Image (tube, rainbow, N blue to C red):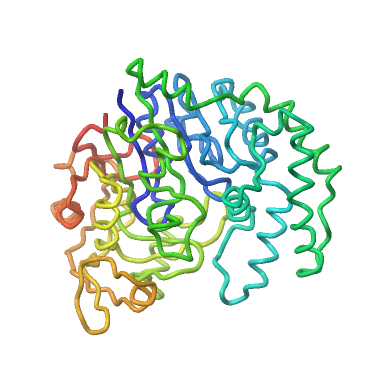
Length: 428
């Protein structure tokens, strides 16, 4: 009963959607297990169509896999319905979608609080997307959340909303001088979503357990990435959930013993969106070059991504934390044409060298990267399909990444298309 976890090994935007789409035709279920519509995947199909997915698992583009939104996701129903309609208009069969009744809903007060609190923080802001994800997870932990299943019971929906808005409206109005959220209008709005979402809502845990017992393959698709994990990332500059491999079990209801493989996705360089420490960040022409050539702009937000050289300390940390069995290195083609390609192999912290992740937030903020310079390559690698097709220097670069991470590099991306990859080891 194979369950495979696919996670980001950096700060997100590594190309997980492309990898999911590469293997989606060989799995029976594709499950989104964390995050909300603050994340996105861009997938380019063989016929050149480009899809930007936000809540729907990337496996939606394969006709045979069931697509599941698990209990660990927070859902803005309006956004989800827009995405469902957009895919249906482009010929994608969305009838395969299943939504966990235990997933939590993003409500109007979550979005309002997210925006106003971030603005209030000023220079200390986290860099959220303002879509209500953090406040929704906050209510979940505080046991004041409203779940997808509550859409099916108007009485429960109203009761829960009245309780939570007693306090949240006081905060919005008296602390931040913002308009209060109207209970009646919100209930009316969300009940219209309920009618459309009703056919998709089910006990997804039972569905996945049955599938695993029947020997079917389940792909657990993470959003965001390791360094944005609430517990194991660069706190407080993190997301509000656990996108690491361990979070897949919690966010989908799949037992740890079912997981047979963990695929980590990493760019051939590093990017991050929003605030927070980033040791290898570039502020020079190289940073501009990586952003321009790599088209480093957020799928969901359109924000410019911060860019930097590959960080092998982060890669080793992610490999150990997630138990990564296979690395997928994307966007190697972006590095073509550089005379040398640096890799951060260690940090200097308070005058001492370390090749491990610093323990404290302060140490990581002050970590200075120690680079190893590798010779670059000038050839166009977009047509490479076997490792031997790559220039010798590109091969050395991948082999060094593999050595430093402590796990094998199975796929190397040499372009944005689904088929633009060098396959060293099969993922399934």
